[in-house]
Structures are given as structure tokens and as C-alpha cells.
Amino acid sequence: MDPSRLPNGLVGLVEATRGTGVPAVWLRRGDGLVGIGTAARYTVSGPERFGRARQWWREVTATARRENRVGGPGTGPLAFGSFAFAGDSAFASRLIVPELVVGTSDDGRCWLTQQTTADEAPTARTAFAALDALLAAAPAADVAGGAAGGAPAGAASAGVVRGRVRDGSLTGQQWMDAVAAGVRRINAGELHKLVLARDVVVELDSPREPAVVLADLAERYRDCWTYSVEGLVGSTPEMLIKVEDNVARARVLAGTLDRASAPADDPDYAQRVLWGSDKQRQEHDFAITSLLDRLTSYTDAMTVSSEPFVLELPNVWHLASDVTAVLNDAPSPTGKHRTPGALALAEALHPTAAVCGTPTATAAGVISELEHLDRGPYAGPVGWVDATGNGEWGIALRGAVLESPTTARLFAGCGIVEASDPAAELRETWAKFRPMLQALGVQAP
Ligand SMILES: C=C(O[C@H]1C=CC=C(C(=O)O)[C@@H]1O)C(=O)O
Image (tube, rainbow, N blue to C red; front, top):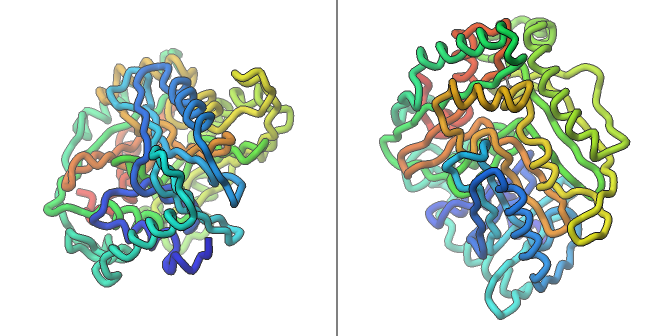
């Protein structure tokens, strides 16, 4: 597709959906995928959620008539998805097949896919007509604040207080008590690392257009993956697994330093205070080890740097490690040998110690005891998969569930090790809530 059809790129397309429903989104540095409308969807709960969703997608793509004139990851049949963190969550994991998918890649390619369950096969003419109709219906750019009458996307957080933040399942004090209990259990030798999360609820004075929230996140957090799947929105810095043909990539994060408290005149601050901290390095080591231990059975050729690097985001610094693995062929359910797809790998790798702990099963048990929280899709895989098994599954962090036009539930968690201090961890959750609070136009209390 000629990119000039999208004068303001994919972020502009997201903004153009204002008032017409929330698009499915996967965007980084202005490129990625935007899905509009729903041709088909599948929901599933329970411990078998990944396998059953894969089975459904296999059946859909096996029977679909398709014509793909572009080729490459993200072209042809495609589903966005979001999976519950835990097998016993009340949240229904889901795959969504949008009616229209618009994609762009950093090599300048741009494509449009139309997916339908109707007997009539889509054509280039019907696909472009659907896209043009959407763009023609878009509100004028000078009302980018949306129906809520807020500020334009780029200025969405200009300090305007538009609502209140209240406690979620636990108060701040109760959550700090849970962290202290977690530290005691680590010190007693029950486990090595635990990730404890909390939720807060934002109540807005007036509705905030999801498209405006998404555009704000995509513009401000360009190095993160901005996502939207049926009310789950956010901008995650952590890539659980990306599969492109036979190569898998992951970005593992653990270890955090708030940029708001950093001195302005100390360029080595993050390197010294974050990279140089034994506590932060220990947190990171557990996370990277948990990923490598599980990924290793899928590859004979894996690359990971010997030391983490400092990743700078607008709100925080993280310790980060990038991993690349050439995938081995494995028997598939059809008997043919092929490399595992992105969703199969997401299932195999989830949950890493960046969001659960070490050992995994013990940490998961302690989490459900101490958190008093159904994490829902928070910290679960979010992303997309195509018909060839290519896809990207990030970890749903730095996000919110939009519960109503004026209510959003935000989640954030922290890695707890023996040296963790409950008050410092509570402050860290506020740094992690900041991207969503800014995008919603609300100030932290
Ligand atoms: C669990 C979260 O972050 C994880 C990813 C990066 C750094 C983390 C940390 O330093 O605790 C967490 O492991 C979250 O943002 O809710």
C-alpha cells in the first residue's frame, strides 16, 4: 500500500478511530500494526488457555481462503491477543481477528489486510474502500483531545488534573506489609525472588478517548511497545518473545531506578546507582536466568550479552538484556517439522522471573497468597501472531484495563529480593504507574 494513504502514519490512524471504537494496536517507534473492527474472536480461560487459543488459530488459518500480495511477518491473516497472567484468573484470554489490519515496518513497507467471515472474498477495492471510509469519518486533527475535550495527544499530560486515583485491592500500607512478608519468606529460604504487584483505580471527571491515550503513549514511549487489545492498553518496555521466521528475540528487564529522583548534573547516576547495585543486579540475574533456562531447549545458537545494559525510558531506567536465538526445528501437530511459533514460545516462557519469581511455582503460590489481586491480563503476554507463526508477544506492563469510559485500573509490580525495602518498592510502583497516569491526564497523589 502507498504510505501516503496514511498522512500521519499509524499513530494518526489510531487517532482517526476516535469515536468509532477502540483499535487493536501494536506500535513501536511509529511502526507496527493497527487493527480495526472484529471479524472473529476467541476467548478462553484456565491453565490450557494458550494451547486452546493456538488450536483455534490453527483451525482458522487452515480453513481461511487467503491472498497475500505482500508477504513477510504481520502480513496475511493476523490475530491480536492478550492472555491472563494466571491459569485461575477470571479474565478471559483472547485472540481477536480484526476486519482491517494496517501495518508498516521500519524498512518503509506499508500494507493493508482485510479479514472477513462473509462468503464474499475481500478485494483490494473493498479493503481500500473500508480504510478510506474510516479516514473520511475521522474528526478534524485540531480536536485531538477527543470527545472528552482534553488536550491534544502530544500535550495530554500538561499537568491537568482530570480525576482521582484511589487504592485498588490493597492500600499502600497493606501492600508494603505484603512486601515485608515476602522479604521474610525469602530470608527464611522459601524462595529467592518474588514479584509483587498492586493495582490503583483512576476515576476520571469525564471520559478520555482511548485513541488519545494510545497516541500519547505511542509518541512519548517510542522505545516501548504500545498495545491495545479490547480495553487493555499500555506501553511495555519488555519483549517476552518476538519470532521472525526462525529467529527469536527477547528483551528481559529487571532492576529499576526512578528518573524523577535523579540529580540533573550527574551523567553517571544510573550506571552507578542501578548498574552498580548488587540488589538490582541480583533481581536482573534471576529474570534473565529464568528466560534462558526455558529458551535453551528451543535453540542451539543463542546470543546474550554477558552484562546487562541500562535502558533509558522517559520515566525510569532499567537493567536490560537482549537475547537472540536461532530456533531449532521441532515436530508440529501436523507431523511436519517446523520451528515453534511465537504463541507456542510465549506459553513456554511465561511467566519469567521478571513478573513472577524464582522458583516459579513457589513464587506463583506466594503471589496469590500475598497480593490479594487477580492480575487479569497484567503481566501476561500481549501482542499478535500471524498465520506462519511469526509474531510478537510483549509482557503487559505499564498498562491499564479500561473498565468504563471514566474508570481505569492500573497495575505495577516490583521484584522483591532479600535486600528489598517496602517503602522504596512502593515508590517504584508510582514511577511505573506514571506513563498511564500521564496518558490519562491525571497526576499521582
Ligand atoms: C513487574 C513490572 O516490571 C518488571 C519489569 C522491569 C523491572 C522490574 C523491576 O525492577 O522490579 C519488574 O521486574 C511492572 O512494571 O509492573
